[in-house]
Length: 125
Image (cartoon, rainbow, N blue to C red; front, side, top):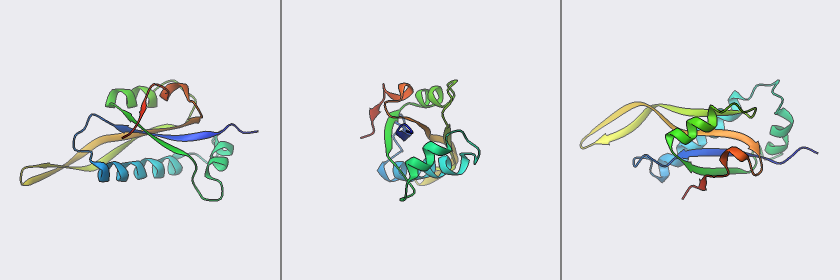
């Protein structure tokens, strides 16, 4: 039997400008990026198909993490699919002016339930 896998979205908790609406959008970007970037010949295709099921999605957990924690998890010498979301036009309001710049807003990893690399992180509030 295939082990239960989760999509862990690692949302930055060190950016005051990431309000709940922006977090929701960035989490959607992470999910879409995961599905798009998982190669058709990935050894995790079986786990992905089970995770997606008939609904097209499975259990997704959003965890709070700093930029460094996300980078450490995504860049770890692990075997599980992982990536970072770079929003090329992240908006940041400065008084009357809004600046748009590239920014890493979150990351993701697709791993087993109780995944060792993320067990120290807390749920996003």
